[in-house]
Amino acid sequence: MGIRMPILAFLLAITTAVTALPTPEYVPAGDEAYTLDLEVDGYVNGRMSSDRLMTFDGCTLERDAAYMYALLMEAAERDGVRIGFEDCYRSYNSQKASYDRRCPVVDTPVFAVDPLTGVTVQVGLQSRRVCSGPPIAKAGNSNHGWGRAVDFTDGRGVLTCSDSTFRWLQGNAHRFGWVHPDWAQCGKVTQEPWHWEYAGVTDPLLVGQGQLNPDLLKLIQ
Image (cartoon, rainbow, N blue to C red; front, top):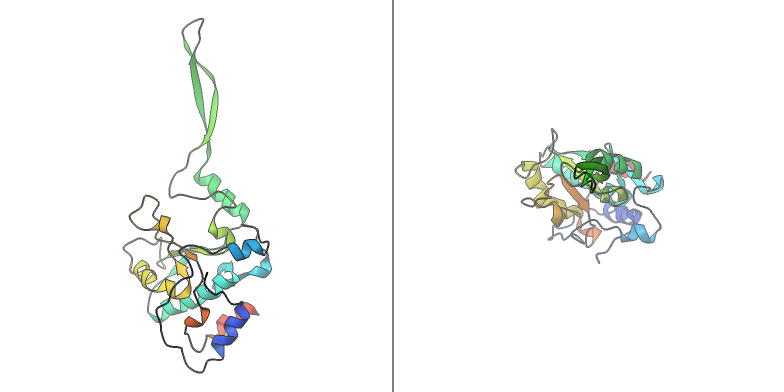
């Protein structure tokens, strides 16, 4: 598993650098959101404590994911890429409400033939959820609930597989530990080009940003 330094040590290592580090081939620490550290520390999906969450420019995430998200957004801005977010951390109740809207419970009549009359009659109701739209996880099962997933936009609307913003993410997000999980890949039935997850980087020191924007440092104050 890749190295995941405490956020303060990470910040100190970068901000004390005199010049930017060279740009090696960046490799994410995984291909989907890394959550084992949060589970081991006793955090619960959708019920993250406020001391483990941070907000950058309106997007609330788990603190490590938030910092790397901030670096990613700054890199996009430098490259002239229009990028925004639609969804970041979701509380348990928020995820449940989204799931209930997307997958409401529908009652379907159950019929049977009356053995005495031979007439088909309704004998009850069968309740089941009927989902529509893109796949959605039940409350407590989404990586948004760990604060390590973001639904990006192109700054105007939902991200699509043909957007230049999506292509930029494909070529750059991995440098900051953000990955597009396999199930969300374009061309699949479950495709979600907007959904990206924080997997971490193999070595945070590889993110050679040199002098940080002072606004990013406010994330830990």
